[in-house]
Image 1 (cartoon, rainbow, N blue to C red):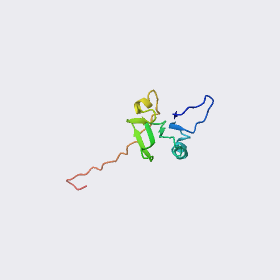
Image 2: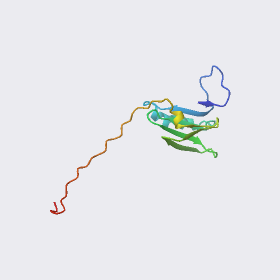
Image 3: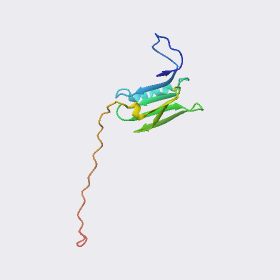
Image 4: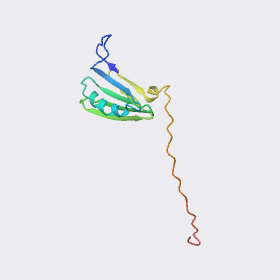
Length: 123
């Protein structure tokens, strides 16, 4: 989380973040994209909410545009993620540096048998 206002040494909760970053887990991914997203969008100080996938290179970016409307973008494989308030961008390579992602198997392709067709015999 990025907070642009003073925070006390003993404070464990802040209600004025500028940016929140969540890294999903199997048990929280649905909540991060549902209940937490809805709650964070209610914070007047929040400029961006980033959801970093723990299984593959993917960052889901939710941000408030200049008109104050919420926008959404998925960055997959490559791209740059702007971090408002800090006025910086991170690449997916930087976000996933030294992260070992689980090997995800691609589905096996379905093979089809080709019938031999003899044009001379119409069989």
